[in-house]
Amino acid sequence: MARRWRTKALGALALLPAVALGAGVGDADAAAPGHLPASHTTFTARVFASGAHLVHDTPQGKEAISQPDDITALGRDIFVGFQNGVGPQGQASTSGNRDSTVVEFNLAGKEVHQWDVVGKCDGLTADPVTGLLIATVNEDAHSSVYLIDPIAGRPIHYRYDEALPSDGGTDAISVYGDMILISASAPGTTGAAAPQPTYPAVYRVTFDAKTRVATVRALFFDEASAKVANTNSPDRGEDVQLALTDPDSNEVVPDFARRFAGDFMLTSQGDKEQIFVQHAGGAHQSLAVLTLSDSVDDTAWASDHGGAIYTTDNAGNTIDKISGPFSRGDVFVADTPCDANDAPSTCPGPGFPANFLGQLNPNTGAITAVHVKGAAIAPQGMLFLP
Image 1 (cartoon, rainbow, N blue to C red):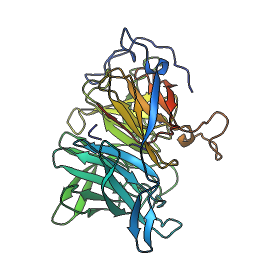
Image 2: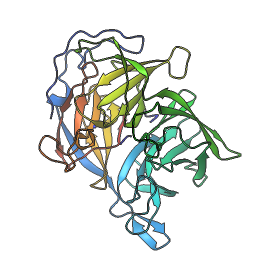
Image 3: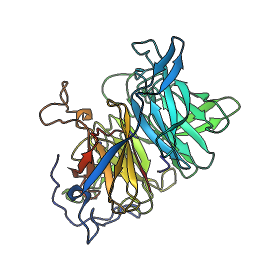
Image 4: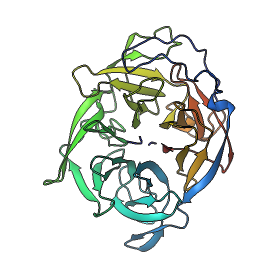
């Protein structure tokens, strides 16, 4: 859920000394000495923007936009993908609409511009080098990708060069160095049900502007080997074989992070895992897996005391702004209990509450609910801006 070049209530587990797994896996505690963790701080939320009064054009006429999901920033403007009831394989909404809407907002929460893309927009990010937005559509199957020039152009549609070898779709996007990395979501949707074959977990994607073809190749696979990163695990530092079923959000861990700084990170939402990739795409690429205490969608790292987290509320049709105070390096997640693989079919329910803002301990994987007053929030996509 997700959801970026700016770059989901459980008690904390016991914190043991960290084990070094390599240069990208540090050994600092989740909370820096001298300050309380965010779970002991009260934050304030307000509605930054809402889709309630925004419309887009459809063949049937103007229609209200809804279901904000992924969020990113370019310059000082914020961009959000609204899914408008489109299904995960591009199925039409109940009104017959098949388009998602990418909306640009200024920092006052006012709409600046919007673009429609065909399909359900589940991944959106900005490339600071090219100045383009990248949007993926249809996270379960029949997926494709768009490039959007927010200044001069309309969306340019790219098809993938082959039927996706994960037999699924594509989701979140990160710009990592000179690579575009896209989650290989919903593996096996169009393939054999069992046993699980080796599917790509993340694609490296390149774009050919002449042919409008996006070429994909695997960065790593759902069944790859990774080192256990939980410092309170008896197996810490040991190699395990992944069995990812739900590659979803991804981020580039900022250089100021207290652990995994500079790594590429994939969240396998239903599996309650985050995979950290050192030296992604290089000869010495290596993986570490952090098992989480709950399912999460997007992750955000606080870069300064006075910034804000911007979150999307898919059901509430709002973008919310959460003010601090923050501490540099704190890790926040959109906790999504109902998206765990073991969640009941009727959810929320006992033991499985609605989405909430959590603070993640990057050593143990424990998530603790943080206190938020003001507007009701159910975070999904997340973005921290200083």
